[in-house]
Length: 227
Image 1 (cartoon, rainbow, N blue to C red):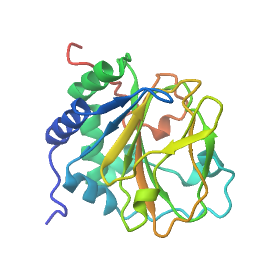
Image 2 (image 1 turned 60 degrees about the vertical axis):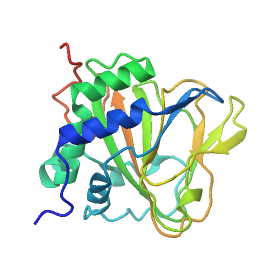
Image 3 (image 1 turned 45 degrees about the horizontal axis):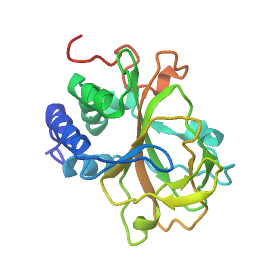
Image 4 (image 1 turned 90 degrees about the vertical axis):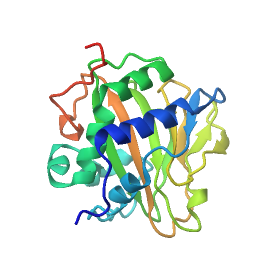
């Protein structure tokens, strides 16, 4: 018997677009949107149940690029092997999701590509303040953190002078979305992680994205309903 019993992609897409429609927009220190109840609970459990152990990193330099060979993407190989990867990817590839993201964020998504990264951070992991590259049309983090300290594992936010101004909530199944720009500074200040800090980063990326092996569907660009 399948465990958990996963919803179909259309149901996941409908759940996500409802969460996006109810998102709270904030404009300081840069425009971003906060979402709650982003994915069906069974979808979250399906991701957390994947037999993918957290990477053993050792010392890092404050960038994820320092361990590119250990990063986990829901790419073609994992979509073929694991049903949770497949149904989430199919859901976020759907045209109604693309339309909702395009209209909410005010971006052109036609012809972009879906990129899904599963992160499992352990003690010692940190990220220096940085801005995402413009090849990402938007960046969304879905928090799948559990445990008594998980509330403190949100993303750190900085102003245009890279001064720390706050921290997002890491409440389970919440999310933050923003469109990359020169002032969208964010990171993860060094602090203890007792357990595993799990999250998904979701992007639509431009057609010139070089690392095609990271993409969910490298031969299927995002399409809007009218296409």
